[in-house]
Image (cartoon, rainbow, N blue to C red; front, side, top):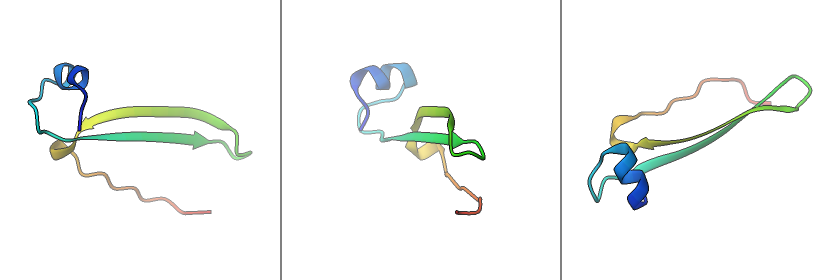
Length: 54
């Protein structure tokens, strides 16, 4: 559940869940090149990822 600050920033009411997504992208040498940390209003998103695993 979101913090009061997150509810205010996202303009949502109490009882609305959020998703916290932390994604790290790596280059071909397994060096982290990007970290994306996002908070999304859960009912507004369907997350789907399609990529080969290694």
